[in-house]
Image (cartoon, rainbow, N blue to C red; front, side, top):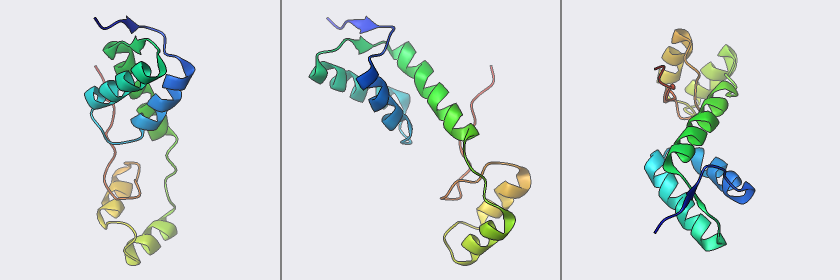
Length: 109
């Protein structure tokens, strides 16, 4: 029987923050966090709570993303450190990621 908790222990929360930075599905993050909780002898957080925290962590990371200046962006595209699609994203007002891919935006219900 699996026991789940609404509160997340501090050790699991730091692990969750690390896992949320990776482009993994939330279900995979939940399974990894469950294995970590079992290894530490802690109660596994519920899937709903993990999902909520991952969305919050990813939204915070998106808000804190530093957009490069135009000269910096053009230089990095010229040096092939970024994809040319990053220029289009900057023109559209989308935050520019290092790999030039537009970040996932949280869905508005």
